[in-house]
Amino acid sequence: MPVTLAGLRGQIRTLVRSTADWSDGDLDRFIGDAIRAYSADFPREWRHTLTLATGTQAYALPGGHGFVGVVSVEYPTGEDPPRFLDLVDEWAPYFGAGGQAYALRSGPGDDVDVTADGVAGALVFAETVVTGESAVVVYRGLHHVPVVGADTDIITVPEPHFEALVAFVEFRCHAELVSDESVNPNETSIVLSMLGEQGRRAWNRWREVMQRLRPVGVSSYRLDWSRMGLE
Image (cartoon, rainbow, N blue to C red; front, side):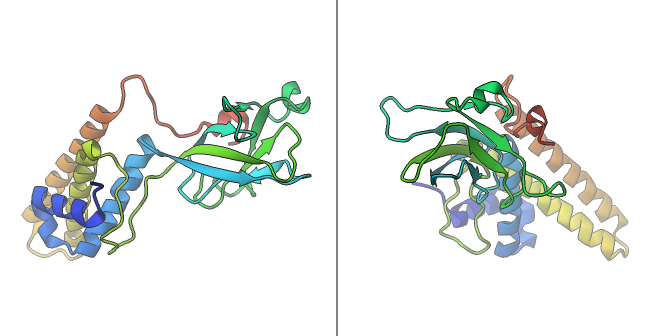
């Protein structure tokens, strides 16, 4: 059975003693932060269907799930075996000749991060597309970030990797406590020092867990836009 936000929150309350200081809403926020941090190294794959139209070669990349990078573009759909396009530079001769390829363009403005959620760049087809055709884009993005208080939201992070989420939430709990104590100092300097040390240990544990989970020889899935001149 898939694990819900309420189920993960319950597991974290059992495993992390410092969660007693925080409400369910606070823990939900920490869980959301944990999923975002986890997704930077272990993004989820999403599918998005583009409905094509004659005279339009460029289409906005999906931006609803924190777009990270394209995995594949199937075009046209419905062929057996499926046909996938090659990624090339838009100025490459093969692209200009209308080859079986696509290119990526940067976002709408130089001052906007092209990987920002909701502000994606464009996918451009080399071949001429016509109305009635479609293409399926498989891309990497964030795992689903549950809404605060949405107890039935499904956690899409694989359960064997929950250890990373627990470790990050533990770090956030300690970090928040340190922040609160430092804003309202009194006769708690020793307590503040202890909390800081616990926070550092929690942070190091999260890094160790992520390093252990990360496949050997495989780097982050963040898309290298600079390689395509899209910095």
